[in-house]
Image (cartoon, rainbow, N blue to C red; front, top):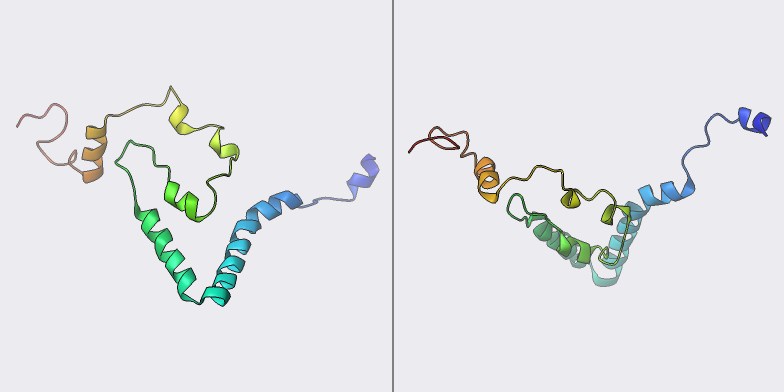
Length: 122
């Protein structure tokens, strides 16, 4: 058995791994083409606009963002993958937590301004 494997140096990626890497993008292109042929070019354009609008929606800093609208558009709502339950950052108890006020101040750049921040007198 080892002699038969000695001639093969690299077998490449597993077929399932190739499907997982190439599948979503290839199927998305095919779906856009099908929608354009069926409903006209306006339908894929409308879906792109909706995807952009839903992608721009963000929560305040420090709050977890679920991107639920984008999951609905891409039909990933019912998908339960490894990232759903393995090593979820929000479930960690040892992660440092900051309050919403300090996160928002750092996002707006108020901590860098003189006279703002912890220990400053106004």
